[in-house]
Length: 156
Image (cartoon, rainbow, N blue to C red; front, side, top):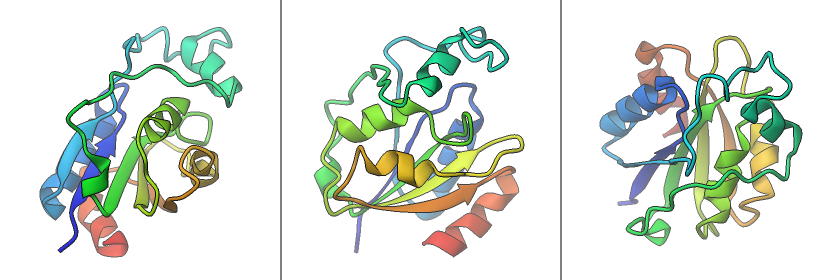
């Protein structure tokens, strides 16, 4: 029986709710991608070209620092469900930081995202650079809690 992990980044709590429901449904372990410097409301102001999130997303090489979980052993997992909000039609670059902090070689990574209106876009392509030896499956945006079971059925 394979071991499964749900890893997620959540700036406002919406992705965290979906991740926790997902982990509960599939009986997976769960870990949060925690930024070293938490995002403030002004950091997340996508209308400002000078906000932290706008600057990070403009620079695809940006790697916001995370608090690395020293107890997380990625080698013990076969499948990782990886979730984040969609920023500028892709995953935030802090997820790249997470992928570059561990060895995901040979792992199956299935993406899930939250977004008010955008799709998952080219998120998988943007993450492959950070985990080139992993199989990254695009997955989809989960807009409502009631849709998590549908997602599980589709991607289990």
